[in-house]
Length: 188
Image (cartoon, rainbow, N blue to C red):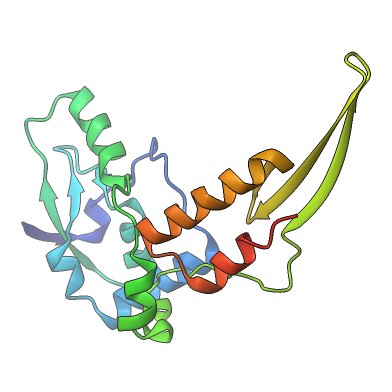
């Protein structure tokens, strides 16, 4: 690791990641309040000083007014390995344990640190019943539409019980928040 002038580091023009205004503001705030974290997670660059990992951090460091940033040079990587690094560095392999976060962490604090806690809006209507007729077969199919965030899951009345069991099993296996479970189980 070495510390270099921020002007020496170049953003990657082929960076496939973006950051929204509110998240960017949180990142800038995080860097201002806890700049030591940059030493623990420096920006990764190639031999041409182009960022392979940390484009958003570099942008936030500039916004925060830093004059220098810690970097690690990833020398001896092929062009293909550099591309692979860019993607793998940004892939989230794990999942949050929402039960642990809800019970062992301060929600306000972790939100302030940049973690977006899902908003399970209890006023939102989660289920609707639909009757879909097929002119070809002359049959009518009764479906339940279970809405969650941007997803709509359609199940037949017959599938409803199996769907409910699948949700219960998923909740048991993954520790989903109880309030969400009761919303999802309020099917048609």
